[in-house]
Amino acid sequence: MKRIVARFFRQDSGREPVRDWLLDLEPADRKIIGKDIATVEYGWPLGMPVCRALRDGVHETRSTIRSGKVEARVYFLVDDGVMVLLHAAAGKDRQKDDIERALVRAASHHGRNA
Image 1 (cartoon, one colour):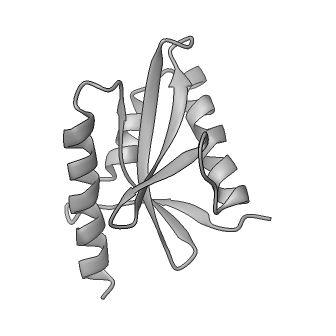
Image 2 (image 1 turned 90 degrees about the vertical axis):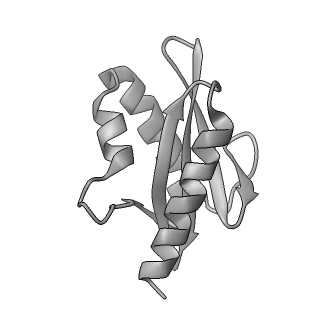
Image 3 (image 1 turned 60 degrees about the vertical axis):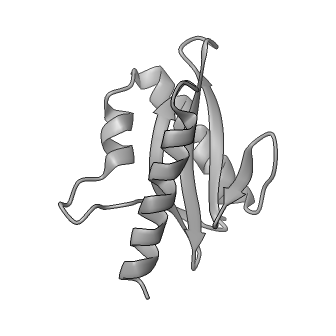
């Protein structure tokens, strides 16, 4: 039984950035990331190596994709039993920017649900 349920963060425009990002990936990579998200859903709360807390309630889960050559990260928060998928990116090049984007989306989510 799932302890939390994953849902995509939806922007005011209706766009779901993590869903869009996933759809641009190869099917094999989507499957890997989906399994890692499911691991969090069924096992929450979890720590490393599956996921880790960053700050302000935002966590990341990492998935090894592209035949073991790239680490993808999905940033999320847990709010009232829901794993809100905020942002995702492959690689570490702009990790600091990716975390900031996730934090902004988390604040937006909290603002809507206050």
